[in-house]
Length: 126
Image (cartoon, rainbow, N blue to C red; front, top):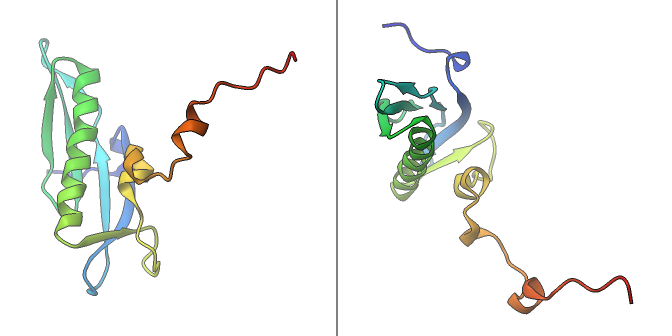
């Protein structure tokens, strides 16, 4: 079977991964475009270098794609719980926060005071 290239995917990116102080390896994260069987749709999710590809099913292409991102998020959380860290470059010292950068994990975002955030805008007409 032919190894898929990054251009074969709907979305893809690569990071370096390391578990503990060991060497870093390049990991491809990718989702293939949804395919339909006439009733449902599915996408293949890849974490090449750490997992075998998996197929995620939905009732239509939108749900299949949304669930593919959710599956990727859960797989990354499990890998991070096992001690894996991800980096843009082989020599980076700061790990890449996939939850915040890719999935807008608002639990990790510093927030302004609730009162300030909920205050109505000032009336500019006064």
